[in-house]
Length: 110
Length: 487
Image (cartoon, rainbow over all chains, first blue to last red; front, top):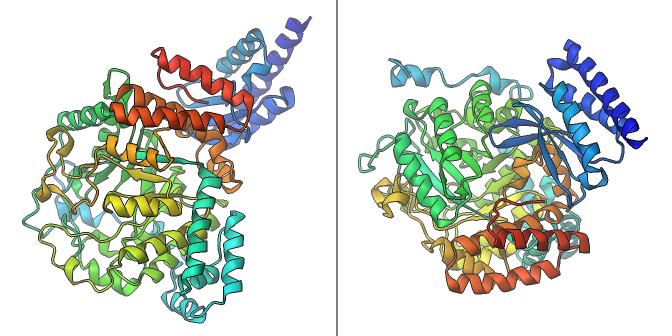
């Protein structure tokens, strides 16, 4: 049951983020895109502390999101050559849920 | 750079429209008359006023110019001691008991400018000119990595042979060069002001902080000391970090060279610079503030003649006032100062030092402090290991942490948590982890022994059990050979 729920949520996230990519007013503005993606993320996974970053070489420059908490289950995920996310509390998800989310996001950011 | 002459190149560097857009009614944010007036108005601050200002700083609020002017004019030594204590408290509150350590790496000293106080000025025939080749740069990086360094400030003269494309190439080499598990994880840049377009090139290759020091904020003095070259344009330099922020380089470093003009005026200049950056960029001011003092340089008589040179006691005061004025910003104390001064001043609120420094071009791989290849003469020649050991004896953990820069804790995110005094919650555990790496891989036995005790103390002081457990787990993994673990 939980797996179906996880799949449905990640499918919704995938669809909504793909729509953002299809909308030129978002896809041409890095900050706006990240803010909108973060909004989708917060609605679907309000418990997750996610920080969105633009990648420049080794530098992951802050775009939006995040928390002030100390990360005790930090997860850094490169979505493509340009964007990445950092989850400060990845431990609240099961490994399967986390993998599902990451795969869905990477599919959007190909 | 093809066949463009030096003059042609110089003629095309400055983009006036990228300066004018930030001015108000055609004026920059440094109003010399107003600064002098503020310093006069606050000539005799009373005790109560000073104590109220200190209290405001302790709550991590940036001071207003009239408040900083009052602190600068304080003559009561008892109050100065209260300010020194407040500086340390603020530093501990925002950044914890850690000192970030880096190495300066001079890459090229060809220069088109004529700064009368600088050993690299174009006219100085006694300065031996060199620009590192990429192979030479790799050797320099390897020498630094072998000593344990993880962070650099790469320094370049202003010249077409060290233009933005060369700087970008050197940054790539710095990041690519590895020695075993050792590597440079963050390369900051101190270079001449650039256009927004050029700064975007540096952003793309992963620049850390971009530093440009105004040297002096006093217009007339600036003009006298920079008679020719691109640097003669005060406004191009003054707004260089506005352009960097506009280009998306969200960590910038300001600074003034103390000894060129009245120290009180230049502290005020640093504050006005901070305020203007915050005004234009959503509350995000400089990531760091530097306050080097004028030092002797080869064939540079101006240095001996300057009437604005400041003594050690005044230096400590100016650093303290900067700490109190901008409580949440990193402060860099360089090896221009001797070890004794550094040990004294680090305790009034500094957050970063360089150590084991060699500022001769190509000096690390040759292990040679060739003064004719240096911009000035260094005051602190302790090795990295010695400096780290001395800091440890004073209770400071040396941090090589670069995690924030590599996981999106930059720009407004960093500034926001710094202003709330929460940086050390994130950075202290990572400081411990990088310190452990250093102790295992590079430290002398003596430093390791002192350092291990300090790590034990810091682990005990971590804010909660979950974090402590995680740090202990990571420390075990580092002992077992893993590297670059961070929270």
